[in-house]
Amino acid sequence: MAPPKLSAKSALGYKFANKDRRKTFHINQKRARDTIKRDARFARKREEAKNPELGEQRRARNKPFTIDSKRKWDDIAGDDMDPVLGQAIDLEEFSKRRRLSEFDTLEDTNHEEAGDTSGWEGLSDADSMLEDSEEEDGEEGEESKKQAETNGVGKKTAMVKKKPHAVEIDTEEQDDEADDIKAFSDDEFVEPTQEEEANANREQSPTGSIAPSLAQSIPMSTTSTRLDLTPESLIAKFPALFNPTADPKVLITTSLNSNLHDQARILTTIFPNSSYVRRTAHRFGHKYSVREISKFAANRDFTTLIILMEDQKRPCGLDVVHLPAGPMFHFSITNWVDGRRILGHGNATDHNPELIIHNFKTPLGVLTAALFQSMFPAHPELQGRQVVTMHNQRDYIFVRRHRYVFRDKRATEKSVVDAEGKPIKGVEDIRAGLQELGPRFTLKLRRVDKAIQKASGQEWTWKGKTDRIRTKFQL
Image (cartoon, rainbow, N blue to C red; front, side, top):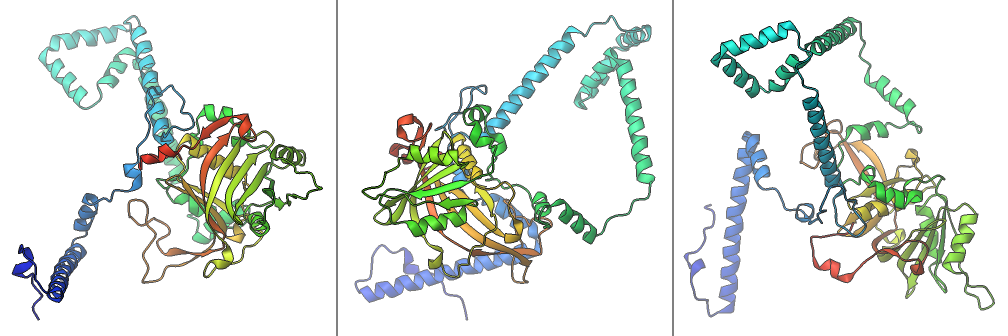
C-alpha cells in the first residue's frame, strides 16, 4: 500500500462550503503530514544506528534552550566588589573571574620582580662566550630563536641563560623522583578485589554503607548548590548561620487561633530533633509574642524556631527564626498536600534524612540554602534511605520527601546519564527506585529580616515588579 500523499488542494486559497468536507480534508492532510514526519524520523534512526556519530552531531546541533541558558545575571563593575543580597549574581562565575584576576596580578608581580633582578652580573665566562657565539651566528641564531618561540620554550631558554645552576638542580631532583617511582613500580603490588574495596568503604563510612564512595565517583551536577563559594562578606554578616556551633534543635509552633495542629505535627517528622508546642489563645492565657517565644526557645538550647501560619484553615506561610538573634525568613506556602493523599505513599521512619539542596546560585540563594542546612543534622542515617529535597526553580522552592532503593537495571531501561546525555561510569547497571512519603508543598521567599520580626529592619524584601523579567531570578 502506497503511503498517503499531500493533496494538491492543500495550498488553495478557498475553502469548501460544506463544513464536513472541510473537516475531512483537514484530517486527511494532517494524517499525511504525520506519516511523512514519522517515516523521516525512522529513516534517521536507522542511519544513526549504523553510524552513531551522526546522532552525536545532531544532538550537538539541536541543543535545547533551557531556562538556565536563557537566565540573565547582574554584572558587578569590579572584581574587588563583594556581591550583596538582592543581586542576581552567579557565584560560580564570579569566583572564576576573581581567581583569574588574582592569578593575573600575581603573574604581573612575578614578571616585575624578575625584570628587576634580571641583571647580567651573575653570568659566568662560559655564558659570555655563548653570548658572543650567538651574535656571530647572525641569521641562524634568529631562526633558532623564532623556532623556540613557536614551540613555546622561549621563556625557558631565557631562564637557562639567567640561572643555569637552578635548572641543573631541578633536573637532578626530577631524576631522583623518577628513580623512586621506578623502584616503587618494580615492587610487588597485589590489586585488591571488589569485595575488599567494598569492605574498606564500609569501614570508612559510619553507617556501613557504600553510598558515600559511590557519590564521590559521580560528577557534580551543573545546577548543584555550591556553599563553598559563599562570599566572605556574607559569612561575616551571618556567622551563626554559616558556622553553627551546636546540633540542630527545632521548635515548631503555629499562629494565634490556629487549627493546623496536624500539619505542625507532620513538620516534626520532616525536621529531626524537633518538637511541637501549641500556641494558646485562651482569653485568660498570656498571648506570647514571637520575641518572647524566641527568647524562651534560645534559653532551652533550641537553634531554630518555625511558625506555621494559617489562612482559612490551610497553611499559608512559614516563618523561620535562626536563634538566638536572627535572621528571620518569611516564606509563603502553596500547594500543600498531605502524604495520605499521595497515591502509593510510604510511611516515614525516625531516621535522620539526607538533605538535597538544588539550584541555589545567588548570594540570597546561598543564604537560604545555609538556613535549610542548619535545620538538619550533618550526619544523616543512611540506613533509613530517606531524603528531603529542596529544589529551587524560578524562585519557587519545591519541598519533597522520598525513600529510595538501589536495584538492578532492567533490560528495557536506559542507564543513568549526566548533563551531557552520556552514561555515568560506575552506575551503568544500577537504577534507583523512589517512593514519596509526603507532605509536598511549595515555598517562596518573601522577606529576610535582620533580627527578629519586621521592626528590626530588612536585609531583603520581595517586590512584585521584579517578576516582570521572566529570565531573571533572585535565588
